[in-house]
Length: 435
Image (cartoon, rainbow, N blue to C red; front, side, top):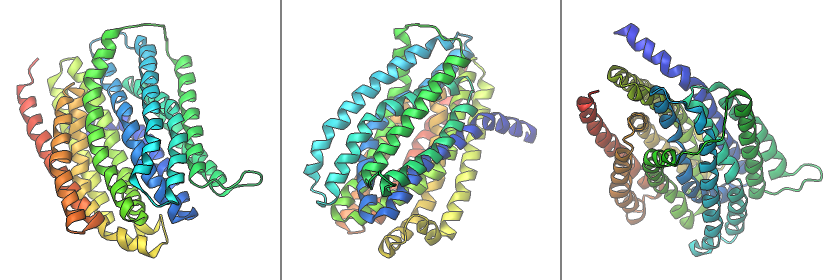
């Protein structure tokens, strides 16, 4: 049993480790934004916190759909179908999504005035969102090619590029935010321009890599688009449901005080940093379960599922302990503002509890993606975040004046409900799984 467990752990980590490095690199790009913004001014940090909360909710819709690429292509590979021919359809599909999302982002900018944020923050929010809208093509290009390569278990190069992008992003952030020589200090606008440049560079490099390493031919298959939407759309909507719940905290509290939006950004940055590891494991689970499902190997479906869940929970438990022991030190990494530290530290303890359930739910989500039953993920996320979190979190935060702490109590409760729903449904599905 132990040797079998080690074998499946190794198989998962052969895929997950490079993805972890890439995911951490991706989140470090966000961390770099927060660090530089926080050092520039609390207003800059508050502005990008609100702006990214809005743009993330818009742009994650298409990104969520694109996460269906790797389990679908893996499933084709398990069925011994030539999967390389789906490269161009994947590319066309992602660029179409990018165009739609860019337009939606641009149309949302005039609505910022409706929220009546501080007059100092509003112009910075609008500038940031305008530039980020045009970076969508680069972001989606990088996402779709990375997902495509992951389906073939090619994970080292795309995630190496993400790691190198961290260095480039930090350098550009410092230069464009604070100014250097003839380049003026641009504050929040500089952060957006840096993101735009880095996203396009990453996407273009991955495209060139595919042209050199894979046998690609022009191909069209409308059934592929249908299959991709069938898997990706429920995942996308479920991620959107979760993102709206999370990011509404910064948007709503930002109206009370920009410092709450800044605090939420710091907490979410920490949560996202640790989340990248179980997310990578979830991606590996989806690929392995998808391949095993296509090959009709029920034993491997169950073993990869069980192994992935155990590893994710163990990792997040370690992160939870670290946050609980060193809450103040962790917050001080991002800011020296005394009030911001005072507000953020109590939330770190709640975040520690949230970590465990967050690791479990993303592992369960990966299993359902591999089984091509992503409607379950959508249903569970909708119940957890919209039926449970929104009324509970907003009541505690606004009615009982608990502010950001009230929201996070609601998020912990929602994560528990989410794991319970998906866990029960998964057990029922695995018992019925017969090939």
